[in-house]
Amino acid sequence: MKLPVLDVSVVIPTHNRASNLPRTLDALNQQNFCLGNMEVIVVADGCKDNTLSVLETYKADFSLTVVEKPGLGAATARNSGAQKARGSLLIFLDDDIEVSPGFVLAHVTAHQKKSTGKDRVVIGYLPAITQHQTDFFQIGLRCWWESKFQSMQRTSHRFTYQDLLSGNFSISAELFKQMGGFNTEFLCKEDYEFGLRLINLGVDFQFSADAWGYHHEVTDFKRSLKRKFNEGVADIQLAQIHPEIKDALLVTQLESRYTWFDRLVLWFIFYGSAIGDLCVMALCYVLKFLEWYHLRDSWQFLYRKIHIYWYMCGAASQFSSHDALTKFLDSQTFTTSVGNSKIALNLESGLDTVEGVLERERPLSALLYYGEHYIGYIDPEPGAEALRAEHIRAILLAKFPWQLISIFSTKRASQESTYMI
Image 1 (tube, rainbow, N blue to C red):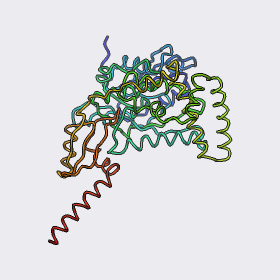
Image 2: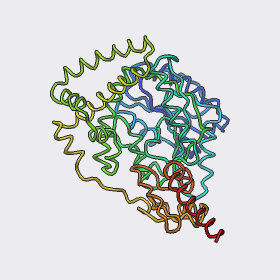
Image 3: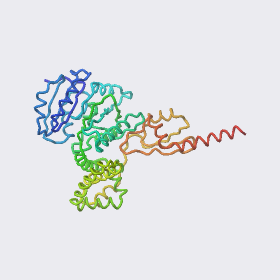
Image 4: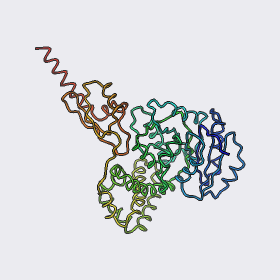
């Protein structure tokens, strides 16, 4: 018997988080959305704890489905959950998030407000709750999360593939199927790769502050090092599949500005990794000393260096030598063909007119003029959405204030001179 189609399917991948799941499910059980029109699919991915028994005994007012997988990674788990889903809208949620009562309704409402008729992806807000509130690492983690969402809340924000966070986002089931789901070759940054494909397809991104949930962050310093290694691996994978963003990746930026110290570090990574790892682990103890004496600036400097080391270790693991890495990064890159590549905009026609052109043409870059005066060039941003009307005012203020002041000052002086004559 074929089950009826529902409005919403919430997909939750989990791995050995039996203690977290009841909190996440309880919050979904308190939604001000009709629970009869939603389902929750939990994908237990290689769980060795009592996750399955917790799920078997959980009493939910919504339809709860459990899928068991043998530890194939988050991307595979999310795809498996989506394949089982009956909802026309998929909401992907991490297992350490305690959502607000209006969470599901906010996602649904955001998709119903499609003014252009285009499909869209909605990214929700995740205020972080960390274990140790005053520790330098946890403070930095909270700051990263908040700055990420503060940026996305601005109307003028130009979304990029890095804004897609798989812990809290929604997408139509039809579009997800059309995209082929997450790339299961990625064990890290699979959401970024998926976001890049969406950007390249021209899908609109939207941020919803109302679709929020507390993120009970459990990442500690040790886990962050492993994460950095995996990020290095993932960036090389991204560059191989999507060469157009190669120049925007951290690994490329680091390669282009190596100091003698960085080159020494790279030598250890490729040819003396055992020694390099020992040295870096010793520096981790120095971090504790710096925090003990409240030397925040020194702590942040050393912290970044340690993380860059592990990130480069991940990138280097994909190559046999430093020369092979350099050759790969220096190889030819290509640009995407999403939207018009470049157009000319004349501000003398008025900002409203310019905004209308941007909304209609959606270029990746633009030449700016005021009459016959050249103002500047809005560069294409690898992995960023095409320019929208909302972008232009912020870009003018941020990048071209002095050019505009100069043009208007010259124009005013010319008018005053004409008036005096």
